[in-house]
Image 1 (cartoon, one colour):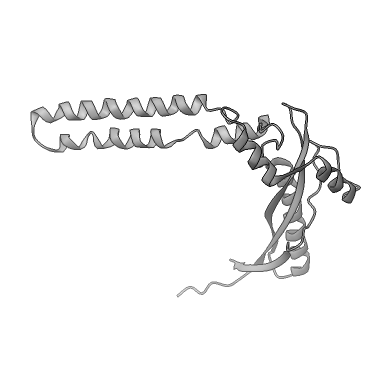
Image 2: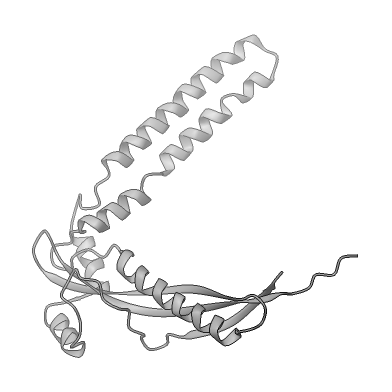
Length: 210
């Protein structure tokens, strides 16, 4: 019987933070900000149990770096609280999420089920298969067209304005926020995430590496 012998430890660090993302609306030029909460992890390895503290510190540093990178790259679709418009990067995220819709899924299911009649030895059932396959593929194409033409900024802007007003600060509130963050960068520039109340950082050892 083989007995596994541990030859090292893998340390995992998890950090949680929040960062204010500043936006200048390209449609009405209103400036606003929203709070983005993020979590990131990092790993450090102590292969022969020589430097557990160093491996833990490496995991912590990597987690903080990953958190900073996510704060620069992650975009939360928060529309402008004044005009209700999504910015270009936000609209891109929403269009990617809408690339697969329920119409396409239903059409695909119908197209697959259309081939079930072929399992029965009846010559006339191929007609049902043809009808079902055509109907299913038609729905798939229609759903794809809907996804391609989807515009997050289309329609009544009022619901989007209400959404933006629930999740963003602007006007006097934004001025007050900037006053409390004297080192805050200008809108649309990346900045380091700042730990908010209730956030936490911790390092925990994972299972030994073999």
